[in-house]
Length: 250
Image (cartoon, rainbow, N blue to C red; front, side):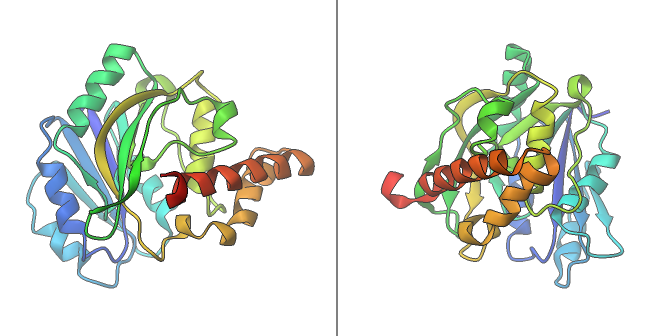
């Protein structure tokens, strides 16, 4: 079994997937499997992936479009590595990402860890300051803002089990991290920039005002908080989200 399982959903990512593939193949740490679920792409994403005949790359072609969260779940079901990490089909790792993260996890005996990442435009040029992994993450402080990004985080499935993404939420990554942190005391920061996140102008995460209701439902429907408590954490999340992406503060 490989030591690391990389989980990737792919939907119409032909423009970027080749660059993402190159970033994985360039990793100094080589004991990995990469499970990509193509979510019924309408472009030539799958033909690009199939060009790479590396046995560590496993392509699953979904028979229907199920969304990113469930596409990740399909890959997670197949994953056999101890350490689970995520990389979307348009994002990028520097060659030392896996080596540094696995080494940090072992040295710190961490169940969950996260690193800095660069926030870039579609050409991977920085647009605002790097997001810094500068705080220990707990269930309590993750309620107020999601400091964990899929492309720069890793968890130990041998110690915490596989954590799947919920159905019925547009904020499935936040719910997944909260469910994970219910099981462990903390996630540890590795303050080194080793990943690049493409901030598309049309990305859902950029349209904060459009997802206030979805975030409220994270607390109300998935954490089962009261209405007042859900509104309290939604307000904190919205304010911290503004600080996270505002160029005034970055």
